[in-house]
Length: 441
Image 1 (cartoon, rainbow, N blue to C red):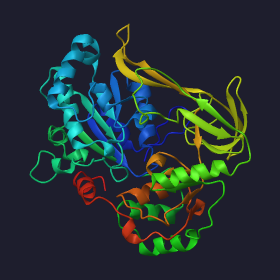
Image 2 (cartoon, helix red, strand yellow):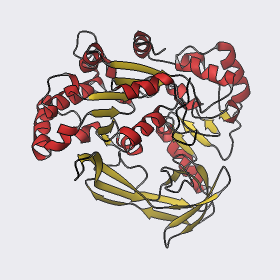
Image 3 (cartoon, rainbow, N blue to C red):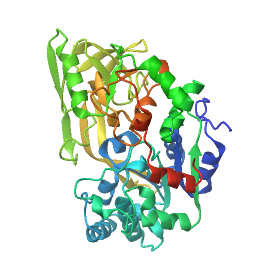
Image 4 (cartoon, rainbow, N blue to C red):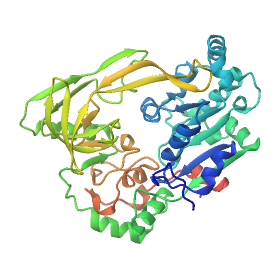
């Protein structure tokens, strides 16, 4: 291990990851939760991302990453045909040739959620806009994420597209023919970050490591269940659950229990913001009251709070629109409206670097009720304490038990309403096989 810092000693990364980014090679950066994958690539982009495009599979992930969804970057709708991808690429090239001529790197965050068919379309798009028949148009590709956590979504009626003998062996990104071609082309590295920073307790880390691989240590899991499955939920801790309906019900119940006047804050939406609510970072009509448990969903420009800070709403001042929140870690902070932007990556007027150009905006108080959340939406959070509500359901998805438990800094901060069975700690055999194949396990 070596230390690579940004001047204040906070960032510590493995030597092979840093050298790989410096090398100019394509990369897959993976690793367990809390190992610094997003921090690493974010710092690299800040220092060296002048000709890079930032992409993510979902709207919320793109906002958190400061980038675009893959579909938006290609200007196509989901499930568009390959012909539409080519037509869109040619149209964008005519409108803005300098951006595509100068693009040399594409960074894709949350790669585990990117389907193999979508990655193949991104390959086709880049070959077209770059006018280069090489895989991904000769652009340096950097993929970031842990496929043993969140997985690609396959809708009803789509499953028959994937399987042995079909173009895509599975929905996973690494079964895209484009990714396999990239692996064979040379100049591509695999980096597995191994040092979690979120937790420090050795037994808890060993338990999480086993759950991630679908092989939890039976003794550690039994001891964890004995200590944590007491049903005595912490009153101020967020509840995680696999099911949307349970999370919604607990948030509604928490707000209803408060004897205080409700107020509603309305979002401002403008420009080319996506229709629907899937890309909205917070509710368009946000109803709260004094005493409500809340979580911030953006980073404060002055550093008073970060995305995922939890606390209690103390006061609402409609003019000038400021919420006073006491954070669980002590300080009282003012939370003001935050502006999220839908961006396009373009070449700046001076021709020096690529920059984000805002094409749509969403402005709202960056708060959400924090009584409960689905495990899926808790991805990326770090919690000091959490309740796991699974009594009325099973942890049904591969990787879901790992995502839930790895959100918390300590085992002592977790409270569960029932024991977790070993068979619920599932991992994808397909992913495990791939990570072993490339030396990342």
